Image 1 (cartoon, one colour):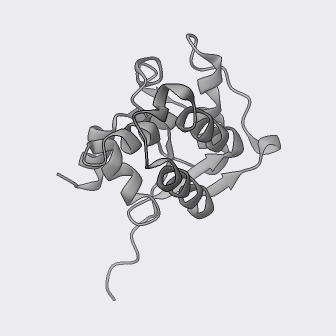
Image 2 (cartoon, rainbow, N blue to C red):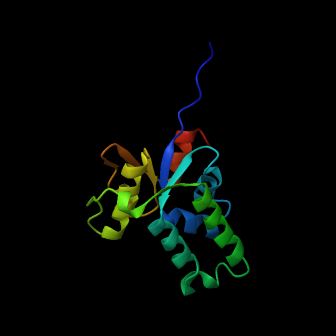
Amino acid sequence: MGPGPEEVIRVVVDTNVVVSAALSPRGKPAQVVRAAGLRFELVWTGAIVAECYRILSGPRLARLLKGREEYVRTVVAGLAAGATMVAPELLAAVRVVQEDPDDDVLFGAALAGGARFVVSGDAAVLAVGNFAGVKVVSAAEFLATLGEP
């Protein structure tokens, strides 16, 4: 009998990775976003989706995304549609990121959704390292875990 199917890796991807992917379609964050649903299962919650939309449609990014706004909204919608969505009432109540309590949602979603990784570009989130069995990694580190160049 051959080997069983590979274990599906569940991952929470931080908003800043999605924003970086939108700004630089050839970078490591974009590779992570493209791999969602193919190489790993995305675990998200409504608050993360809302933050993606809020930041990507904000004035700071408007001129940088000029002409690609609709495409970027479609990408976020596709990510959300393919993700395992954790209902707000199921989010684990945790206090992890001292510098920015809003980032605690990443860990609440990871714990409730059975994610093994949080992928982030935020220094305060990356500084956590590990929390309750959830490993925090950069986009490049996560791609290396997947065996991507």
